[in-house]
Image: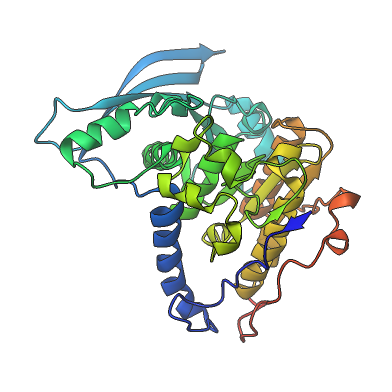
Length: 388
């Protein structure tokens, strides 16, 4: 493993002030949100002035609504209704018999509504659906195409460029995360959803998207990037052999449109970075953050994800909730499989309903004591540390 430089200390504000209290953390959050958007992913707009939806398909199974497809129309500015773009969304509802079965095991399940998973992509999340969770899917390439080496500007950026020229610098990941945040808006409008039990997940580029959306939107209760690698849960500064790095991600022949264009300057110059992805993941704290990774997924830098996880744990210690910072490693490569989904179900049932959970840390190669030194700072001692 190559350590480009020691991971930066997140407990120091941009002006050099050392953070020693939770009260200072809100200022840190504001600084880091601006930092990751302005230097890494690109800035994005807020809520569109108008958003309309219509049901295009419904499906009933044994007398209950099991699936619904919606077509969303987003209108950035009401005064220009002719400028709009769409997004098709699929919602899957659990069988009422399933919900009743879960309630027999977990008495508090369903109180105030059902938990809801926003999945970036089209995975039906069967493992969670079969355990009473509502699933919202959207295919992110509707907002921004996924074209290798091809700088196609999607309908979302096209529309906003027409009504607010040059106001936003968003790359594709920011566009997709903007769509995920709009799905949070939608989830909160569903009467059967518990507004405090919203989860976001996705795999690979969609894992990068889920992490960014979860870091920015505090309405999301649990954040789960899966196999997200470079520009996701993996470290930019701790690189395993054969993994994707900034230079590879931002190569003009590959996915350079995913990031803020200027971020490519850090390719081969990672030592000039004054932040790493534990800063982004620190924005999720104190909410639960679960990374699910395959130990053979070399391109996604699983050992670099372990490094970033351990650095982020210091932030969770600062908030007094280190148990909410989690990593689930499994055998295998670049996929999000049943084992990953069951890990997400486990942390969700633990956090929402108090169901006992075991931490997962399987890979001997990735044990912390096998890693080279990667940071020279720790959680600063404060009275609330470890007690919240």
